Length: 93
Image (cartoon, rainbow, N blue to C red; front, top):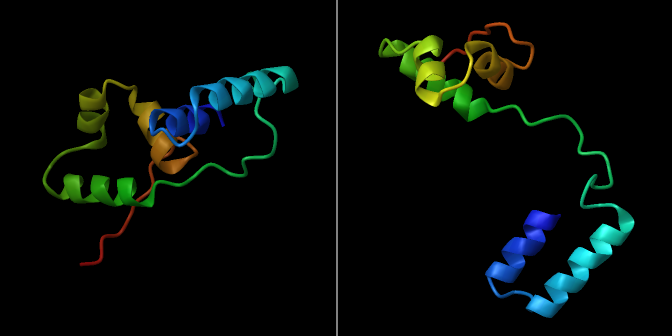
């Protein structure tokens, strides 16, 4: 919510005074540390997995992508596939 408020202020959709008031309200409720509500399950990056499959057809591997992104391979797999194991995505063109 803080990011949305910040963006609204930057886009001049809210005045600096309104922004400050909203941030104080969030602080008072403890929402700047932990926002309320269940966010539900994390998003599954379908297009990113598709892009990886296309890259693999050109010879670029998950290891290459992890090295280029400067993240551990296990972290890339966890982000792409959730469980940390490799899953295959079929490209239909």
